Image (cartoon, rainbow, N blue to C red; front, side, top):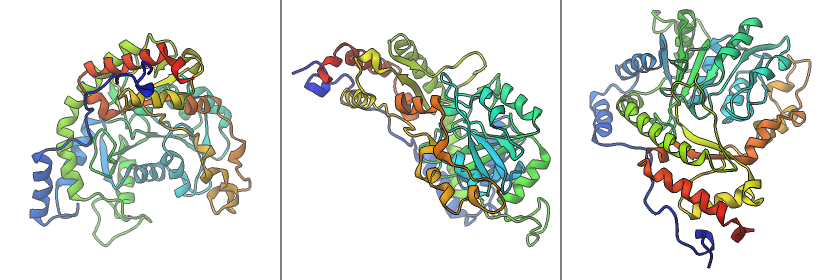
Length: 410
């Protein structure tokens, strides 16, 4: 019998972890009120309108609009920013797939640009070499709620007359240089999907500080209607991306909890960082002085197997799980290696349609930092940061235990 739980030893963490989502009678009553009102759609009720104003203010945005999902938020944001068929959009390959499929869904083409090894966010130095005359926008992702370098990204965009559409789907309450994220580019997109820190099962949000863009977003969300126009006037081609009153009512209550939950996640992350930052082979995601508030959609770090006797990440994670620690590998494949993109040039995607005189072969894309992260990254999901900070010691203890006894697993 070994010392590690995986080889018969005692488990390090035995207390239960927080479950997700968190709810109580307030959530139930908020939804019940909508049911009793008989006003279930946003045109009849006031819940969507109220939450829009509240969340836009919470994110330091002049204008905000509820939509059906984070993916639809990205689509609406790109269209509002002027991206159309045949345009190219700079995106990172280390992100959820919607960042790259949103351009495809509106006829544009994602161009993958590598990320920084310490922040996991879009590398500003890699943007200009990837630009062509077709490039219309840059879409930085604030991974796990850690802001990308918006100052440098915005500077490159201004230089080349590009729109900045920020994927803020991990960024509820996050700050860059003292200001909330989402409207520090031209347009921002949020997600309220069930795993998110602020959630209603599904849903999304679009933010901007530009009134003209706000008017455009309104039309894109509302079947092409003009703000202030008639119910049967549809001057713009657009679908229906509206959120229901039920979702907005739930989000309103969830938003009440968010500030206190943010404080709890910050405390847990600080305790965990203090413990594991000094463990050889575990390097936490960098923060820095510009990150005045992290969104904490998770706690991320990279794993170096050399510090664990060459133990593969998969075996390390298996050992952690046996010790009661719920880390995962996060995004384990660069987006350009997804089948969707590997076969894009053979299929009916924008990259192969007649309005493009070149074809994109994603099999030739190589982003070494992203590929390294996909093989070595560690993710602790946001709900586990709601645990008592003392439980973070258990995570560090488990990692140290594995490091001291990795020979049992080789």
